[in-house]
Length: 328
Ligand code: NAI
Image (cartoon, rainbow, N blue to C red; front, side, top):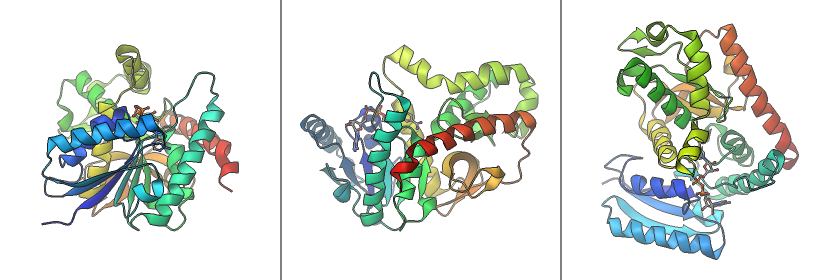
């Protein structure tokens, strides 16, 4: 039997946590033959720690055959000990009257501490996914706070945007999502992200040619994907959680187990590809193999796409500038 892998999850008593933990323990993340140990972090306050206890009782009550252990933590230094996978979901939400700048700074604080803790105690091969918003900048901060870990081990979640785009294309073309390949989402996990189906195919046939409607792309598709989070809050009263948890599972599973040549979107530190400055935590189309991702190279960037990419890059650069003083 395989040795258990340690999966640390922050914000474990939150909404996304409640959809995520049970699927990890069920084998959806790392495979049905891979035992897991859950190391769950919540903030050091009674209400959150009690809620976490309750969630753990429910996890226990599922009697998951693959679950080799579960522990509750309020200190990242113990939560991240020897972690093979770290899902950084917990973040500071925007409260009333909070400026964007305050939000960035509050989160910078959290992700500096957590980056340092990962640096100190996690497995040297830890794979980190940041879900908590602003996800790209939080991932960048964690990466910069962990100089002893490879920068490539830090990633941000754009998979929900990718999956949202897939579902819109499937609905438009009337074809199953599983038949769609070669979709890309560029940039920041925010409404500026650029979902790009110019290279996408369905059963080998060009999606762009089948849809053949640039106005639909610009006026319907892109705004629908960009504003999907808001639409869900308006409909449900709370933000997307199960779909976010599902995207986190997709992201890490594909990273660990490989995509067999299929393109997926990951927020990763740029290597300079497509003119994105090195280390910028940016959504790119990637393929993965043997636990490593590779940016899909050689794609033609037309004027419209370049404009969109510049816009999302500008936003990320501004976010980074806003927290620079905290990274000294
Ligand atoms: P939630 O508010 O229900 O849960 C967050 C949990 O994190 C809370 O239980 C809180 O106590 C905990 N937490 C806060 N700071 C923490 C810290 N320093 N250490 C450990 N735990 C901490 O929020 P929800 O719905 O679960 O969302 C979590 C985050 O994911 C939010 O920032 C949200 O904006 C983001 N998100 C990102 C998406 C993406 O595509 N990248 C999609 C959907 C949500």
